Picture 1 (spheres, rainbow, N blue to C red):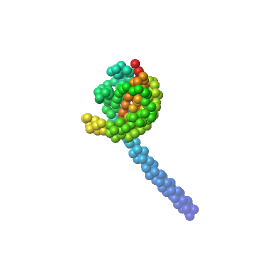
Picture 2: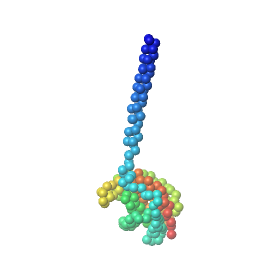
Picture 3: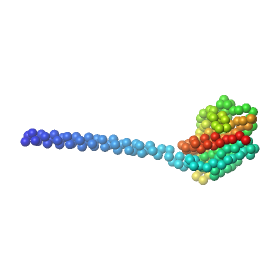
Picture 4: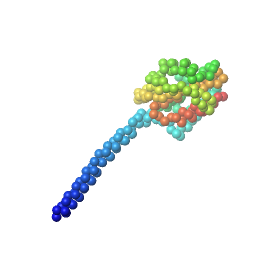
Length: 202
């Protein structure tokens, strides 16, 4: 009887340890769930509010008034004239098109010396990025990147942080500047590449 009693006590002790061990793992499993779910929504509202350019976006040709070049711009975007610039826009996305006479091709050094200060002075919330050279179908271009605060939406009054890419193309004394902006977090890499690769000199 003494042996059987000891055996029962041993089995009961092992069962208690197993139950306690199972309970000990439960809080750690529960703790990982809120951690992953709480990180998921970060940044989502602003991205969704601003909107990406859809992958199936249709593009149409735009020819400059002086017939100097053509580019492709998203179909259905509103078009406006701001000074000498033609601007195509939709929500917080925009494409600004400028042309100017320029004797020499721009360089990284000339862009840094001549362009950054005027951009900073006229751009709300300006934060400088980089100045570099990139290759596109029309040839080499100077690329200036920066971030800014968008103009307020006329309906909602909302502004967003936006990313800007300014491309400066040059040929035979003529400069074409394409400035593309979109809300921070929007996935517009492919559309912006499609637009900047579409430039064709006449």
